[in-house]
Length: 412
Image (tube, rainbow, N blue to C red; front, side):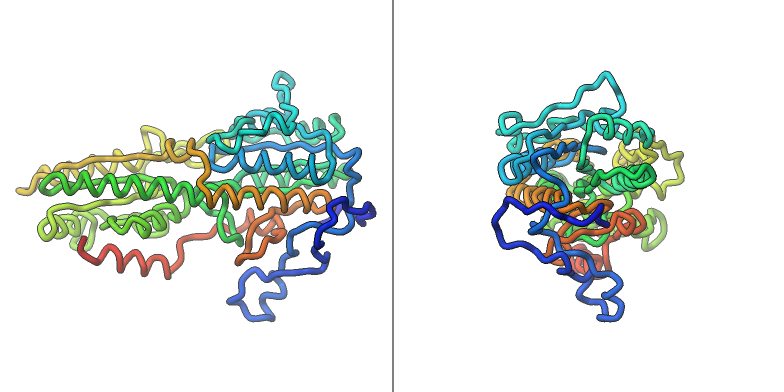
């Protein structure tokens, strides 16, 4: 959606993307179906909706910490400041709370304040979860005279962005809201991946390799690794494939069965009898299948990392109880790299991707696009309507599951 007709000449002087350039949501769809799922190609436009000389911009990071967030903030500021000539960029601190809380002053972003932040993990703005009053958010945007708000986050953040867009439209304001996908879980629909995912897989792979070494160090050694993945098991699946040492991979998309001939316990017994070691990778979202009371965080998301609902210790206890009644005692080692992953700086792949996302988000906003998320769709950067993003959640597909079955079925 565009706020209006762009009339200002772009200062970039590059090869511009035509306004009618489109890319399809999936190259596997028939042309008749794909036409209804075609997205605008992202990139710099020849005409801008906002005059850079008087444009004021806000940016906010929401949800959990994620590798690459600081890379996004730096690239946003540098693109706005050096290439477009925008002089006022405010970073709201501690998520949406920082917009509505009068006691939390925003950080004025400048080339100096972001000079080295891309080498750091976390977010220099801080982050938080929890719903905030949409009217109060728009009140503050209007009070500060902002023309653009960049919202960096996952599905919950994009739902909040949609609400902000709706209130802006109701008031007849000309403020662009552009989303940038941030989630380690990689569960944002229609895009190739979210930034932070590659770094998460890299660190999770190292944890699986370590669990394998520990399992080999004892007869009937069992290594258990829990990784992030609330509703989708992309990190668990990808890290297991990258490592090649996982023997059991438990995903939120598949039924968790412990008992019975085809349950985890029996399969683990057979594995240990044959190979004397095993590695189990479990995604945090499998906790939803344990019939325990699931706590919720301030945003309404299931808290799978709380002591009461954490699948990792629960699974370890269940395995140790089972084998305590058998004639084959085990030595179990448990690794949870979750917060180490969240705090890590972006690896090379995520550093490149997060920077490109930020630049395309700036191009989209300055041209007057709003109610969109910027992401890479089958190799092409595109404007994905927020409505589609919040209404769809991707899951690990059949091809990946087949690859996991081949991996875990082979001896190691």
